[in-house]
Image: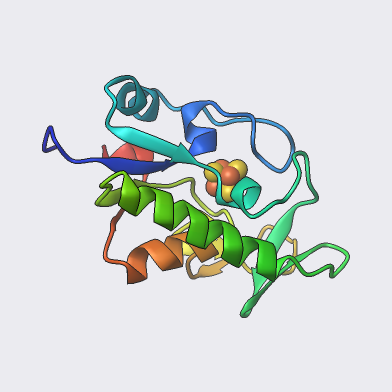
Length: 142
Ligand code: SF4
């Protein structure tokens, strides 16, 4: 791992209580990066204006919906843009992201049926990071 690389990281991995259920996912490798001043924690869903806790949401095609079919695509897109803007401002070239999230997951996400089934795909923020050329990493890749 290069010592000057800067990372944007899912805030829940840095111990922020920002998950849909009000919990966090503190991960030692990510905490270490933040302590070293090399990581910027962001929660795209909170940056898009969604409350915590919030109902679980999943991507369904181009939309993001909760179990009742309520649409939060606009909030997800706004939050992803804001998070990427901050990441660029901070000089981040890689993203360390929480698995399976409709925002941060990459490679595999829930399929939109709220059944626990996974499909190939990226969350809204992960897709934007990928398009922007950031390296996408899971905590275990650090
Ligand atoms: Fe964590 Fe990303 Fe979900 Fe926020 S949007 S709680 S940072 S996985």
